[in-house]
Amino acid sequence: MQAYGFLRILASQGILPNLTLATTIINVIVIIAGSMILVWFGELITEQKVGNGVSLLIFAGIVSGLPLALRNGLLSYTTSQLPTYVAFLAVALIVIVGIVLVHEGERKVPVSYAKRVRGNKMYGGVSSYLPFRVGQAGVIPIIFAISLLLFPQFFGQIVAGFSPRLGATITDLTSSLLNNQVVYGILYFLLVFLFTYFYIGITFDPEEISKNLQRSGGFIPGIRPGQPTAHFLKTIVSKITFFGGIFLGFIAVLPTLTQSATGAQALTIGGTSILIVVAVVIESAKQIDAELTVREYEGV
Image (cartoon, rainbow, N blue to C red; front, side, top):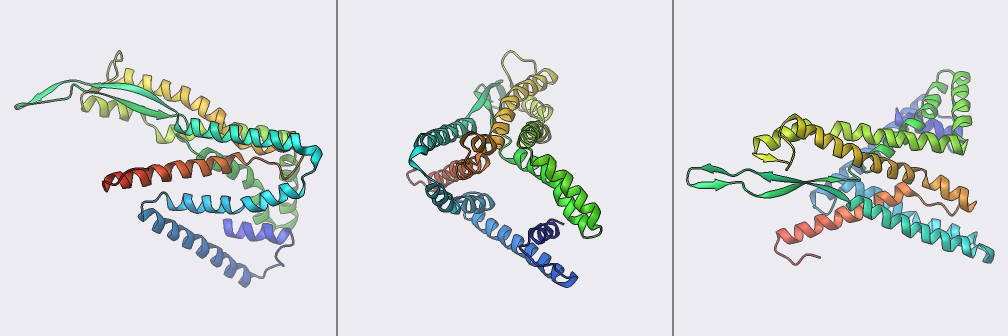
């Protein structure tokens, strides 16, 4: 369905001619095959333990577009725009630093383990902590949000293959709504914020963590085991997710904000792209360092 919708969008923009049924099927198969080959390449990279393969491929695609973006920025440069360019670079650096801090930021919940005697050996009696990262959701909420925003247009392109008039109506309504930068920015921000809570709610189970702690003899100091611990963890994660969702929402609408502030199409900070690049670089560096440490080499 995505391949077909992609072909319909290209055809509507005049990039492709009107395809027959046979050529449409062939092109859909080619797109699917190309996607699966990239997934296979990603798995091969992952097996070499130098990072997540698919993420590295996305990282490569983003970085490969930097020379063209730099060229476009230089071509549109004039002496009068020097303060704008300096401010743009300063904001870009601040955003990168902020993404690193949020990505690495975590709330450490202390955990103590009771002493247990089994035979002639004593177990437990140590202290540890549960790390809850601020950016635990990663870029998944942004992907969910942009997919939902693009779905009406994608659906309109599919419908156009069966009913051109209805498809054109759906596409026009969607375009008129999303072309309004204010409405688009507000919807995008809210969807990213809501999907952050949705994703954390699916992937994080405080009751299961509480049960595992209780089984292993662990407890949070000052909190009773069982349901009180689960409620405490849920409260902590809810507070962290609030700030994480606000940050992700800001990152999502950052291109719109910078474009409106600078008034130049070339000067656009792709917050999502920077988020992916920074996350991939940090995770790959950590994984390579871990592999070096395991093999008793000096870590970087």
